Structure formats: structure tokens, C-alpha cells
Image (cartoon, rainbow, N blue to C red; front, side, top):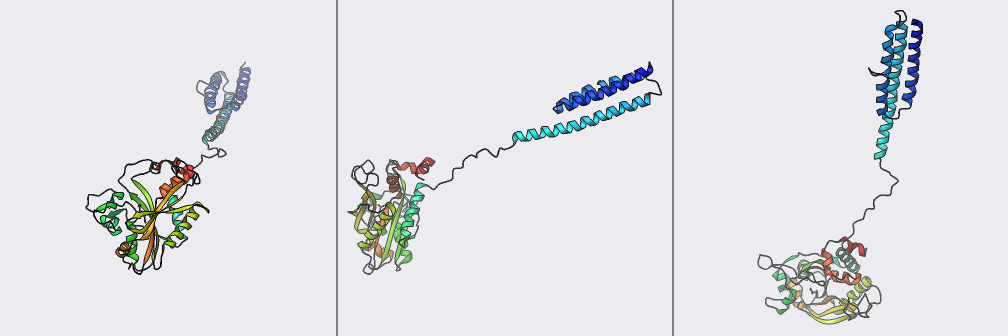
Length: 350
Ligand code: PHE
């Protein structure tokens, strides 16, 4: 009876080991191994249940069976630990894989920054004049009444000042320049009596109602050449070359008589409309022509203010609005787009 019982316990232990090992091998998560531990190895588990039967085993047999029981216990504990580690590794890897970046996915496209239309236009213009030996010269946005008007042959009360109303600062005689022309005198005073060939890009300001065609701020590019024997032919040649480089061969152009206090004679330069090729459209207001710039031979008085002797020196000057030109070139119907900071403007052009 006692032997039978011993055999029974030994068998039960072996049976338990086999069953437990198989069940552990089929566990698929650490969660399941914890349940497994509860079933087989915990204080209320099946191994303890079997060992309770040891009480009925004879004193001689007890150590042997106790040893087997211990072996089974150790074996199960070791197996549990090994399986748990295995499953932990797998779970960790699975969690990591879930978060992993899939490098085969296409990336989010980066939109490269682009230059503002005005900047592009200025650089293009500067490049063309550089090819004719003109250097870039810059002068301040905040000017004195003297530079903006008086030294350009518009003394106080001169009616032509009405064409250039501006914003005044709280300091008397300090104002925002209405054109880049004051830069002419700055350059002349700096370089006289050396010859000059410069272009002068910069922001200008006018006290005018803001409309689709005119903002209270806008760019101008001024040009100035001073030297000996400079004639109106040089002006015409330079402008013609500029127009050819900017708009291509074969553009028709015209020089219309005009008036500026600081040039004599004065002209305005037009080209045939780049949108309709002179046929007439909304951009050229059905005239077939686009106004490009004001220009003329530097007035002797201005040369003198600049430090040149007008009996020895002569020069030509011109001034254009590149924003207006870009609008015409790209069919932009409202100058206010230049200041709205809307990327669609640059997207549309580049
Ligand atoms: N400064 C003039 C304007 O703003 C343009 C101009 C420049 C005309 C140089 C002649 C010579 O309208």
C-alpha cells in the first residue's frame, strides 16, 4: 500500500512535470506564465497539492521522494524563468517594432524657401546693369527735405513737390524718401570728380491712397552715370540694352517727352505690352504700351550740387519701379500682394 502510494506520488510528480512543461511551452505571453505559476508552483498550486500527500509516505522513502519533488520544483522554476525571459524579450521587440519608423515610407516633402518677387526682380535688374559696368549703391530710406527735394532742383514751394507727397517724421525736415533720386546726390558727393556708374535699389514711400495699382511703399531702382562726354545717346543705348536683356530681343520701345525737375531733357520710356504684344489688353489699359521708367540727362544744377562742374561733366539718370514691372511680366493684378506675405505669390512665379 505504502509502495503503491509512493509510486503514485512519483508518478504524479512526473505527470505534473510533463504536463507543466508542455503547458509552459505553449504559453504565449508573460501574462500566461504568471497564470501558469499560479496553477503549478504557487502555495495553492498543484505541486503543493501533491506534496501534501508526502505525509503518508514512509520515513525511509520520504527523502527519495522529497528529492524527486525538489527536482521537479527546481526544474519547473528554471523552466518558468527561462520561458519568461524569452517571452519578455519577444514582447519588448514587438513593442519596439510597433513604434519603429518605417523608413520605406515616402517622406513629407519639404518646400524650399524662395525669394520674394521684389528681391528677384531687383537682383535681375542689378545683374543686367552690372554687365554694363554699373555698381550697386545704397542710400538711406529716411531722408532730409534737402536731399529728397532741394538738391534735386525742387526748392521749397516748388510745385513739382506735389508729385511726391510723403510721410514726415516728428523731427522737422526729416522724411521718408519718395524716390531713390536723393541717392544720386549722395553718390555724386561721395565720388566727385570721379566718373560714376551706379544703380540704386531701395524702398520708397508715398502718401497716396492705397489701391490695386499703388501702395504707399514700393521699390525703385535708380540709375546714374556721370562722366565726360556722356550724351543722350548713352542713355538710349543703356536703356535699350537693359530692355533687350530683360524682355528679350525685338521689343518695341518709345521715348516720350516728359518733365522731372532734376533732369533736362526728361523722358518716359515705354515698351510694347509684354502681355498682349501691343494689341491692347487690361494690363496696358488697351494702349498697347507699358510705362517702364522716367529718365533724362542730369540737370546742370543737380550736377553742381553733387560737386561736378556742369561745363565739363554730364550724365544721365533713370528711375523705375520693379514691382510694377513684375506685375506686368507675371500678370499680377494687385500690388498689395507684395506685402501680404502669402507664399502663393512666389509659388506662382518660380
Ligand atoms: N525719381 C523719379 C520718380 O520717382 C524717376 C526718375 C529718376 C526720373 C531719375 C528721372 C530720372 O518718378
